[in-house]
Each structure stands twice: as C-alpha cells, then as structure tokens.
Image 1 (cartoon, rainbow, N blue to C red):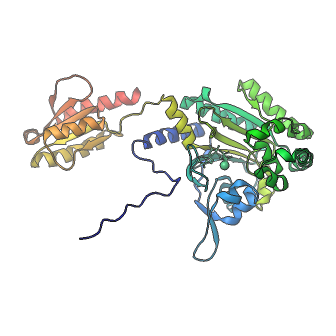
Image 2: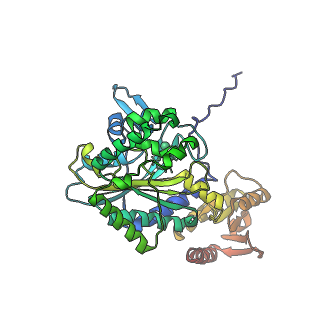
Image 3: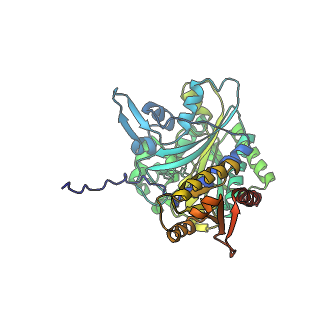
Length: 432
Ligand code: ATP
Ligand code: MG
C-alpha cells in the first residue's frame, strides 16, 4: 500500500486568495479600474521578472529592498534575475525600451503581485499585490495634484475616505538633498549616542532614511533634526507651494510631514502617502512621488515622471474592518434537474437562458442527487431563484420556477415564459 504523502504547504508570506475572499478583490479591482478610466489612464502589463541590475540601478543599492528584500536568482543561462519588488522600474524600463517617452505624455497603470523577502505579519507579505500608477512627460505640479485627486476619489468610492489621511512633503532636487544631507549628517553625528544600529549604518549610506525610523528611543532626537523643506531652492519651493494651493482650493486636506522621505532613492520634489491609524504599524495604504531623475538613471533623456503604488491587502484589511461592503451572490439562478430526460432538458434550457440573458449567472446542478439535496445546494449558492426540472416537466417542455429568497408559490412555466420572467428580473436587477 502506498504510504500517505505529507501535504505540501505554500511558501511563508505567500497567501492563497480563496473563493470567499476573491469577490472582495474583484470589487476593489473594478472600482480602481473605473476610477482610473475616469481620468483617462491606460493599462500596461509588465513581466514579473526583470534583470537584477534594473532594480539595483533604480531603487538604489543602499535601500532596504535591494539590501535585504529581493528574490534574486540565477536563471539557467547564469543571468541574475529578480522577482519584481515594485513596478516603477519595470514600467519605466518598458516605456524607454519601446520609445514611448519621445515628446509624449503618458498616464499608465499596472496591477499585479510584487515580491519582497520581509518578515511576514499582518499587512506585510512576501507576495503582495500593488496597483501602481505612473505618468510621464509632465513636470507638474498639476499632474501631482491629479494623482492625489484620483486616489482621494477612489477612497471615497471604497467608503474609506474618513479613515485615511494624506501626508505630504517635498524632497527638492538631488543637489538640494545633497546639501541637506551634509547638514543632517552633522546633526546626527552630534547625537551618535542615541542612534541605533540600523541608523549608524545608514549614517554612511542613506542618512535621510534615518528620519523615517520608528524607534521610540530616537523620536526625541529626530523631532529637532534639520528639516529638508527649509533647504529647498526657489523652484522646488514654488512647485510645492502651488501643489499645496491647488489642494487647498480643491478642499483636500493634508498633513505636512517633513520626515516623509520614502524608502527608495529615486524620489525628488513631491512625495506623499495615504495613511490610516486603523491598521497598526502597517498603516500606509498608498505611497508615491515624483521621480524625474530616474529616467536618466535608466538611460533615457531628461524627462518628468510621477507615480504611486497602493497595497491591495492593506486596503482590503481596512475595508474588511469597516464592514461596509455588501457583495452580490455569485449565482443568480440554480437549476435543479432530476431524471435522465430532465438532465438533458435542463442543460439545453440553461444554454438558451445564457444565450438570451447576457450576464445572467446560472449554475446547473451537476453530480445528481435528490430534489431535496439539490434544493439545499441551491439555497447555499445564494441564488435568488431555483429552476426545477423533473422528467414530467422535461416531457411537457416546461420548468418550475421558485423564488428562494421571498415567500412565493412555485410556478410551472413554458420555457418562453420562464425566459421572459428571468429577463425582466435580471434587467431590473441591473438597473438597481
Ligand atoms: P513599508 O514602509 O510599509 O515597508 P514601503 O515604503 O516599503 O512600505 P512601497 O515600496 O512604497 O512600500 O510600496 C507601496 C505600498 O505597497 C505600501 O504603502 C504598502 O501599502 C504596500 N506594501 C509594501 N510592501 C508590502 C508588503 N510586504 N506586504 C503588503 N503590502 C506592502
Ligand atoms: Mg518596506
């Protein structure tokens, strides 16, 4: 006798999305697509694997992602490849490769899994889903404001607007950041005694990131650290001020967060995050900013770019917590059939109904069973109606219709009458 094999489990931090959860994902995806469409954004679909070099050159060698979070491996040719940890680099790579950035503007979005080897916890996974938006060719700040408006509209649509807050900062130009960096390092050196191990390392590699530290013992020192905004030049300030006044005029409130620096090296000028305090430490649901400099870094001509990415798991966790979404059942009509003639008649009728009623969700009972057991399955399916066909109905070319959700007599109808009844019901449902 064969020995029972041990079951294989999924990789830690990589989750299955089961059928009871997938309707929430579809609901979120549809809403996001619809909002993006209403601003004229187009979808771009990108590979999940890229050359490792792409991420090293764009995200930066001394960031958390490249230092310790990437899934990197050699393929059979010996090339170093990486499962994408984010989408900005791949999107820009594609646009440069296909010449989309010559004297053109683009408003793009992509959606899919990203991979980071982090410690799994609530709101932090090793495979997670991002919806990313990138625009090219526009210096802003008008398009910077559009990004924020678009996300604001999505939160309203999802019913989470009053649970999230917009945080805003400007990182200026790379020259301004370089000058500020010196002032900042000078300040940190006066406080080396409070810097933790991570920060001491970053002091050499990426001191701006120290500002982002959540270590409670460092907060007091960080509060008095020099502020980048105060080191910005005329042009950067003007960009930031006009973005802020657009938001003021549009009635979009924001919190100035002078310590918002973002973990990736490529950002400059506008950066923003949408945060909630309902999800514990994993409170950022959407983050982005301007990254004009990255285009040249990846071999393109000087140009403009701004984008953001949202974490789908965190948005869904927030939605779930608020419990405001009611989903439609996945089945409208369940067809019960008992007897050899009924099996065939039921199948034929179901195909006719699908032909005639576009979008009707009709499930046919398969695998036999008594009327009673099939009714149980019908009820469990969430369907509004059961169609019942026994051999009698099959012989007479009829079918019985029973409402499963409201008290109503079961009626026996001709196929034509049944079709009309369901058509009307479905039409009214679509209008509702
Ligand atoms: P964090 O500070 O939470 O690690 P991050 O700065 O690394 O976030 P980004 O690279 O800006 O995140 O990614 C944009 C968004 O993607 C985040 O705001 C978050 O909503 C989501 N996200 C990032 N990493 C993960 C992860 N490991 N699991 C789930 N969602 C994530
Ligand atoms: Mg991170």
